[in-house]
Image: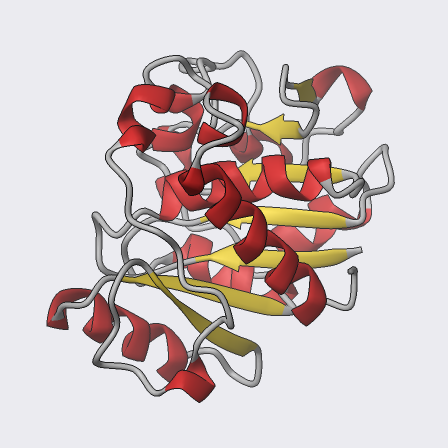
Length: 222
């Protein structure tokens, strides 16, 4: 099982959209995928329609047993564990590793969607991840976030993902495929579906598939 973190200490760069769309693309490529929201604000949980969940990742980090009934299987065929505001608690760095070691199903890949800050969820994620992908737009705000993540990665591989044009980061530090900027994403989000389902033949959907395949290659799961 490989663990992929989607992170940038800068907000508003598209982490949540990326995490959702990668979960769908990995599933399309035949990978058993679990998506976990590790953001106390729960933007991904809200987007997928699971706000105010009865059980969240905070329960499992606190030691509650995780079983099949706690995992949500979405209409887009990936499994999901929602978040809530209790993630602001100071969980131990080892707590997430303990949860992943006790999953009731086997997965090819687990995707972690992280808050836009240098916080405890990020520390937990770095302790279990094989790869951190940092979405970056062509501005100093998101570049600074990328450099902050890279500076604390402690040996975990970190790759930037350019959204649209990139003139700030060297090609060697980037995922091979850039992500196409698109105005179609918000229309898809309003339906609680990814663009890969909402408009599967669109250029934007194909862009996410290409990025997804590049990341699977990086993880050795192609």
